[in-house]
Length: 337
Image 1 (cartoon, one colour):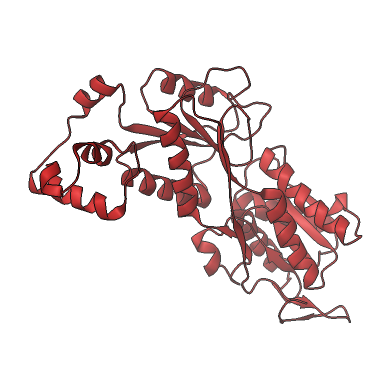
Image 2: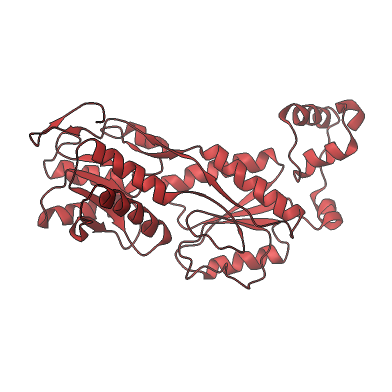
């Protein structure tokens, strides 16, 4: 097989087992040789030989959200390129399922675990706890585990500053709750307001204590509007929340962006097709997945490798849901100030 592909036996093993990244060109040559020889790997024998199953686990808090679906898609795609199968799990808000999955990884039922904890305080990944190969994704950063994330403080500050650049001053935020993600995005929002010498209005912070779904975003925005003057702009902590907010604003007779500008976070594919298309925080999700899988591969190959933390760059996806506020207090569709 190695002779047919024109590579070494070690390279063939790397392609089959997915433990060491190889170039696309080399992988294609090896896979063509595998196909020509009708090679089917014996996973059971492989597991007995190297103690690995060829399966990793991806655990997300809520699989019902569009963001989770998009992220899982890219993770599975990146894992497949490395010869891994992916077991997808939902952890909810507690640490019990996290602990169970860590235990499965310790028992070698999966080779490694990608985990997205909700709160540092309740996560099963803690200092002093013996960890299997695991990579944390998202906003919970535990120094004893590898970590990949988007800088939520910087991203939330940047998109709030975009609204400020369009002339908005009364900026509401939607999605406040007791999670690491919410706290960091709220912090970035407040930093932007403080840098503009604006008060961080507690009354402008709309709570969503349960899930971040369109239904929750709709109900929270609708309820808030009954007791408050409409904001000049609204920053929703996820695109799903923004979708619900767009519904509530329309139902209240408010036009987006003419009356209220709206921005979101995550850049799920549907956001570009909202009415109007949503300005939001985006990032390269395939690069994110590849970075996570590279870290996990290194951790599986060498459990004693140095702990690493990687930050993936974000970008602001500017669409039609934001308008400039003119000096007379009205709105005009225009470029940022």
